[in-house]
Image 1 (cartoon, one colour):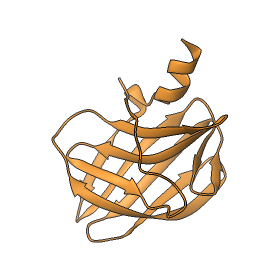
Image 2 (image 1 turned 180 degrees about the vertical axis):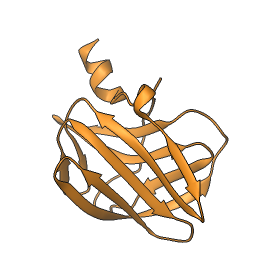
Image 3 (image 1 turned 45 degrees about the vertical axis):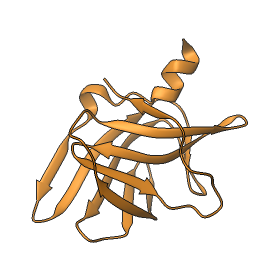
Image 4 (image 1 turned 45 degrees about the horizontal axis):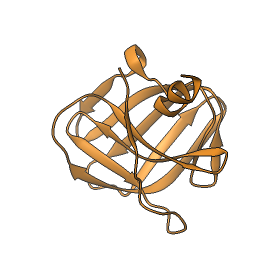
Length: 120
């Protein structure tokens, strides 16, 4: 059960989406550490932002401020979800789905994501 809670990285009621002038954002709460590229995110609250046509995902919060390369694609509308892979003892965020946008974090050293974990 603990493993399930860790992999879900529940965002639940803490998730919100804003669409204004081609800029998008959502808030997430992580309950366990997760890697995004070479960056380690510790448990806490984060803001994730991107703009239409941009190839960068900005992550801020919990004394963290960085961007990672990403791609976007249309996706069926649905709940907020994270795509997380497990490499040994660490969890690696590969992408996320927000409303009708799928975001893939570009990391040439990693394999494609294989697990999609939904938040309630």
